[in-house]
Figure 1 (tube, rainbow, N blue to C red):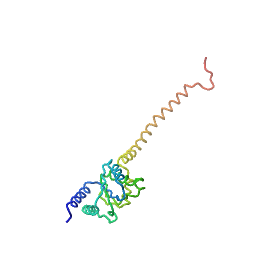
Figure 2: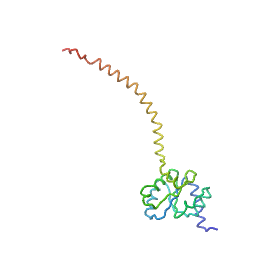
Figure 3: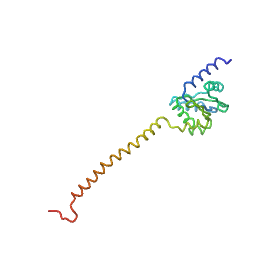
Figure 4: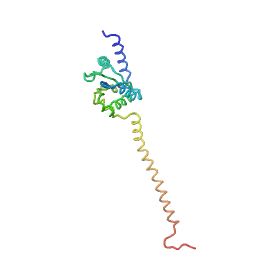
Length: 183
């Protein structure tokens, strides 16, 4: 029978996995407290929480949710970054940033994203997904492009007609080249 602390942690992990839309699983071995606090500060901007977890209890909580973690995924000092879908994408971007990769102390081991368990390669690909603001801008440009083209086509006819009429007026008001102006 597990002790009281393990039962409390297990129920907390189960609660966290149940409430969160996305989870990034990463190694935390060899990271100093200063580095970890800086990473946590970056993640907190998108309301993502990074914490160290007990492997066996996380494995049990994941199994209760229907996710079968591989032994490689939960080996060593493991941390989880928990948040919304946008927060999970932000966490993947922060955890795969060049300065983090350069140190080589933190590696993505997997993710739970939109109800699916992802491996390390797929978890790293989350960093390439655009955020909500970027998607909205792309969608707006796709909608705006054809409308802007239609407006320019509709404006071209009156503009062209106005230029032809102005040229005709200028041609008639200008004196003929061969005639002498009256004094």
